[in-house]
Length: 210
Length: 327
Image (cartoon, rainbow over the protein chains, first blue to last red):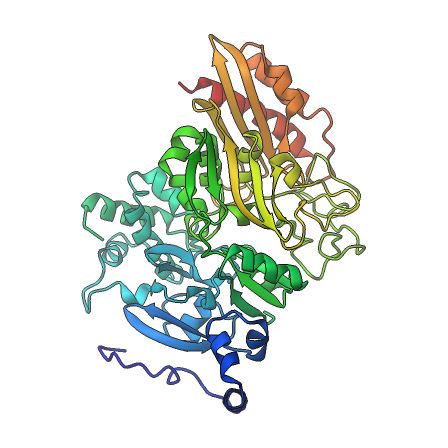
């Protein structure tokens, strides 16, 4: 993405013919919709209006950039990040809230993006693994994971790092037992746990403001 | 995942109205359980009514009663200063549940409303009277290692998965609701129900009712309390069995006792008989062992969960011992 702030939301998706028909049908529908109904739809509180559309609009900020997207209500935050914004750093592991690979921050709190509906993130600020480094300079937690060899295959690592940053900020990383307990929502099949604890502890003890 | 409509309720009253007139609608707060169930096809709502943002998230004390808003996050309650000081048993139970990521999403009301993690309920290829009444119970003669030993029926042997609710049961909480016919309260012991012939009904809520808060009366259980959760790994797993203990001990004698279990029944399982047995007795290991044995007198197991009976007795004794030793 570089430093280009202008994002074309459609650049990342393969628009199929079916999508085109869907979108153009929607436009036709919008053109013949009475103004009152449209207003009700914008307020998100009119059954007829919400039944009328199969997609909804959502505005949110991801890694400091504003996005306005048209989505189906069933789209999870994880799928929105990966499929619509091409932010594939956030990983899909189990997709049912058991592994932590999809951990991101929403308004500063770590959550599971696979169990979060994107439509419910209206107006919220999302931070993903792509948003934590300062340009070419890695985040202290990224550096610590490298220094302490906190991974093997690396698939769980983005989730581990997002969880670890929050864990230190919450004040739940003051000793190794707490780190193990409060990092337990992130599963690592390679079993790099011992080094992950070392990495988190080193950042926590280092006292760097995160 | 099926598609559905989503609407964000502007107020609690509007949420109740929308829910009352639409049979296929469901409330969604944190969504940590519901989104999972929709993905699996276990639950198929046509419309979700968003309530997480409603102004129902305060944790406050009024007239010596602590009120926890239904939309308060599990993590916020677990880390709340007043809760840790005045209801340490509740804080312990909350911290034992799920992971920090899930606690950051899950609400107190949602915690009460979560469904069983019985694998037969959670797989649409399996028979389950709770998911599909009349289809049979796959767990009864199936792989029932995680299942109930108290209060089950031949229709359902699933357990309620919450930790928080076990502490709330022990602390005599009250659930506050608002519905189409106005506000009402349900005693915590009356909120969740046993399966009987209607395992599809987890609780006594009426369609359209919304949980607004949970109230915990003032108590003195601030020192000798413990929440013991026994599970297959040391964190981030559902309980095989769990025990919530709150004691008042004066000069070595038990003045008051509260005891509830999780992972053993269709609802948080309060052990009133054992509480009465403990009152007036000395806080000794012998008494705690007897309390454990007494608690499982009417337990019934189903094969793979036979181990839970002995495990429960031992866990109760251990939890009592740990609670009594706190100073």
